[in-house]
Length: 287
Ligand SMILES: [Mg+2]
Image 1 (tube, protein in one colour):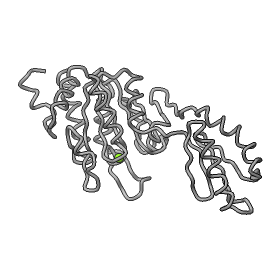
Image 2 (cartoon, helix red, strand yellow):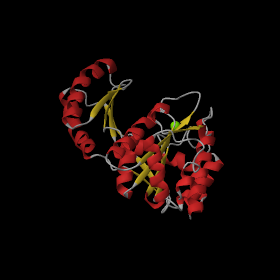
Image 3 (cartoon, rainbow, N blue to C red):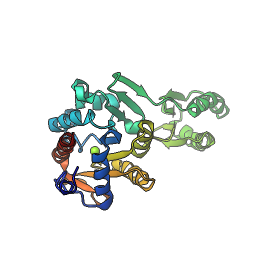
């Protein structure tokens, strides 16, 4: 790309930071090394009252289909269950998205378009250790009647069905807290349930792991909400370590938390779609 075109390409909306401008240059120079990470709701799918009716902006899907063939990888990172995001996104039906990955539940679940496979993060061994230790602990407290529920990355101990649910809950709280801590897990009390959980993934962990897995040389991340902040932080960390990164905020009236941290602000999913289209155009033009 010649100098004189640099200012024009991807001008709408404008990149307003130096790291952002550097990232754009690196992306245009090396699209094959670029990972495009995107949030789902509010970023490529308009937020609607019924979350089951949130569908990806067709212009975004079209642009991502074109970009999928030009960049290293396109990855959607969402808090939603991965199957829901894949279904609502209609990502299966696009040839250009054959290399796409969707990370659900903040990275705990994954779908790869290449083999149309869904997978979950393996269960942490600490959960099995806690499960093995529980019967003795409950017996010692005379609470063997408590129902335990294995949830993969968590184990719930329910006291609702015991003769004194509140008393049992109070008695179990310190014991289970100690058990959780001993195994590097955390305890989350609920309504007559004490849940021992593995630390959750966040979008920052998910993006960092993915970028390292595919050996990203540049990263774009686009998000709209507080849950995207860890991903923004991850991109800034990678930037500090020498990997150019571009942060885009999909701005809405409801939430502007990311705007201060973004290199570029797009107006909602339609603005994001327009920018992605422009990026695809720019990469096509330089062929
Ligand atoms: Mg969102």
